[in-house]
Image (cartoon, rainbow, N blue to C red; front, side):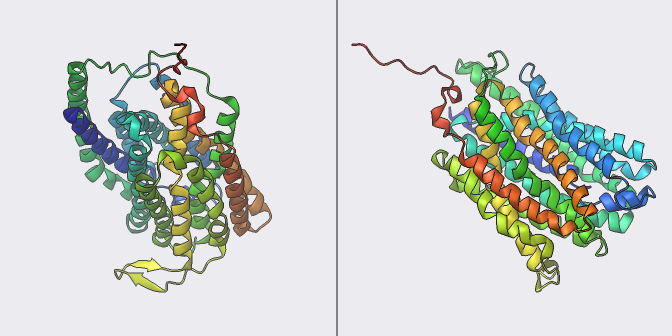
Length: 418
């Protein structure tokens, strides 16, 4: 068992490196929507439809790959999908039509969508008894990537233009190659160790898909849509509100928020036990209401510069706090779905990591269009705040995991008649 546990830890590290790399790559364009519109010669909001199509295809594509992954195993998708995305995202500066830009972003998003269900399920199953903690560490690596990606992408765009994104090849290609080699090698070692212990690694692919509790899945989904909306909406809205401040400043705002998500992930990994899952799902969402509402009205003038470079101001502090309160519950959100649907964990992962984001994107852009029509874009932060309250209510109504026999691999033991 010691050898198997050591291999599992090594595999988790590889998956975290992969997640870090993928999310840096996937978020380089988060704060660049206005720059894309300028590159394409469009007016403000002219590429919004293409951006929406990309984000929805990216998020909802996870359901397809999750459903497929529960029926056939293809571990290479963990590095092959991101490799495909690398080519697509790096060349967006070389296309000059909205259709071509949309197709490149969609194809790149599908590569990212292919990665997440398989990688998240693999990470959770490496240590089922510590699923929350291991998923939190896996999520943390993604949050770190999301913290780096917007600032990195904004800096590259400001210095070299969108064509400068081809610099991704210098670091991303070696990282994904290393991930692929290590994943193949360690997976072979793990299968050998399991065979020696007489344990099958068939996974959940051959088990029937038991129906998850419908009401609980609805609550989880609705709460999830409003949970992720600030995470996807804040960087985009701020990129418009700060359009005159430059891509670097916009990238810093997104990076502070994503860094907060990472800090929340650390808190989840080391401070949240299985008995506090439901509490962690609803209480931080409720506490996030006020800081999320105030972000749009916060002052951006720096109080001081941390390490001489990182600006610290009211806006950045609120973004960081909001990110922390959001991030602490995200791994539990994924873990809860996996546990109430144990025979379809990839599908459950795609629902919480993909479909909620896709649906949230549609709701967010509908709200953004409404507040633009009112000529009061800052008002959308109050909409985000109401969403936090809805998320907290839905999460509070969820039942504890212990209530479901579906969360266990074995059938409930009948009472003795002796």
